[in-house]
Image (cartoon, rainbow over all chains, first blue to last red; front, side, top):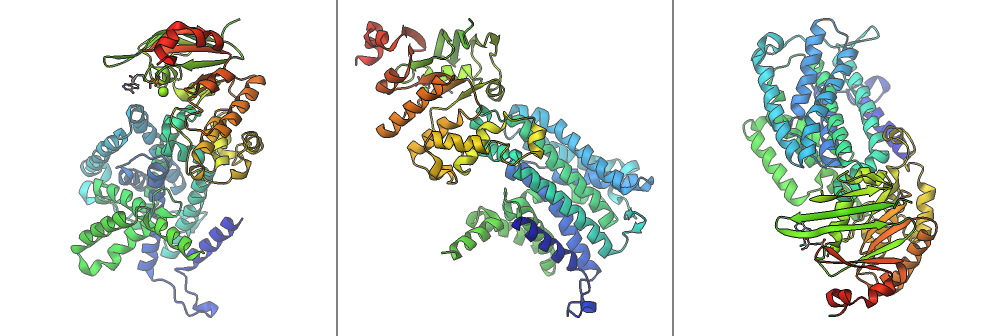
Length: 318
Length: 246
Ligand SMILES: Nc1ncnc2c1ncn2[C@@H]1O[C@H](COP(=O)(O)OP(=O)(O)O)[C@@H](O)[C@H]1O
Ligand SMILES: [Mg+2]
C-alpha cells in the first residue's frame, strides 16, 4: 500500500513537471519545449534500461544489443506509420517482434553457457546496424527517415510536446508496474535464486534456462517498445543511435544506476540523458568525463547510485 | 514391487580418473539408505550422476521403473527427487522463509499461474510449518546468510522437503554441525522418513549413519565393496580394511 502511494505521488509530480503552474498561483512556469523533450527522452531511455536491468540485474546475463532492439521498434513504427498503420498496432508489434527475436537469439545461446549470449547479441547488434544503414530502400540508410508522425489517441492529437510527454509517461507507468509485478511475483524469487546460485536453483526445480530465456526476451521487448516510442518522439531516425556504442551505454546506465535494483534504470537513464546536456559546453570532452565518472563509480560504489543512496540512508538511521 | 530408484552399472570418468565404476543398487520405498566410503571414493559423483548434474559415462538410472538417465536436475526435481549438496547451498540474501518458499514454488501450479497468483505461491503456511518442524521459526525473517553454519545446514536440508519429494538425497547433511544440532537433525529426518519419504544419505559421521540408516552401501575407489545392515557392514572385513580400520 505504501509503495503504491509513493508511486502515485511520484507519478503526479512527474506529470506536473513540464506544466505551467502559474495559473494555480504557484511560481513555477513549467518547462519549455526542449526541456519537455529531454524529460520524455529520459522516460523512453528508462524503459529500454528497465529491459537491460531485467536481463543483467535480475537474470545475470549480458546483452550488447539493446540499442539494436530499440532500433527495430523505432524503424518498425516509423515505416508502418508511413503506411498508415495506427501507433497502437506498431507498438504492440514492436514488443512482440523483439520478444520473438529475443527467444530466437537466446534459445541456442543459453543452451551453451554463460557468456555466449554476450557474443550472440554483439553479432546481432552489428548485423542490425548494417541493415539499418545499407537497406536504403526501406530504412533510408544514413539519410534516415524523417517526418515521423506522432500518434493520435482516440481522436486526440499528441503533436504537442506536453501531451506527448503525458502519453509516454502513462505508458512508462504501465510498463513499470508490469515489471514490478513480475519482479515481486514468484518469478522474481526464481530470478534472484538463479542469479545467486544457478546450480542450487536448478536442483530445486527452477528451470534456469527457461527463466533466463524469458527474462532476456522480455528485456528485448522492453527495448522494442521503447524504440516504438522513440521514433515519434524524435520524429527523425537514422542508424547512429542504434549502433553498438549506444548498446554498451545501456549496460553502463544499468550499472551506474544500480544493477538489480528497481529504481536503478531510471537513475542511470537520467544520468545518461542529462549528463550530455550539462556537459554540452565541454563538447569533445564529454565522453571522456563520462567514462572517467563510470570508472570512479564502479571502483568506489559497485552498487551504483541506488546502492550508494541505500547505504547512506542506512548509515543515518541509528 | 519396483524400487523407487534403480541404478545400473553407473560409471563416470573425469579424463583418466574413473570416479565411479559400474555401480548398481536399488533404493527401496521407505528406507534410509546410507552411502559411506573414504574421501574421494565417488559418493558425490554418484549423486551428481543420478540427479542429472553430471552425465554418466555409462549406465542407467530409473525412477519408479522409468528411465531418467541424463534428465536435467530441474526436471528430476519436478518428478519428485530432491537433494542437498555437500557444500552448504542456501540463498544467503533471501530470508529463511523465502528460501523455503523458493524450494517449493516450482511445484505449485503452472509457471504462468504463478506469475499472476499469490506472492508466496500459496506456500506460506507450509513454509511456517517447516520452520517450526526444523526449529527455525524464530529466524524466519532473517537473511539466510546471517545464520550460524549449523542453522544454515538445517535450512539447507529443510529446503529439500518443501517440494513434497518422496525421494531425497542428502550429501553429508551432518558435516560441520555441532552434536546437539546433529541429534535434532537426525530425529527430524527419522520423523520425515516415518511419514513416507525415502532417503539416500551420504555421511562421514559413523554414529549418525549407524543410528539413522536402515541399510548401507560402502564405496571405495568408485566401486561398491560392501552392502548390508549397519551391523553387517560394521563387521565386514573389506570395509574395515578400506575404511573403518585405519
Ligand atoms: N568435476 C570433477 N572433475 C574432475 N574430477 C572430479 C570432479 N568431481 C570429482 N572428481 C574426482 O572424482 C573422485 C571422486 O570424488 P567425489 O565424488 O567428490 O568423492 P566423495 O564425495 O566420495 O568424497 C575424486 O578423485 C575427485 O577428485
Ligand atoms: Mg563428497
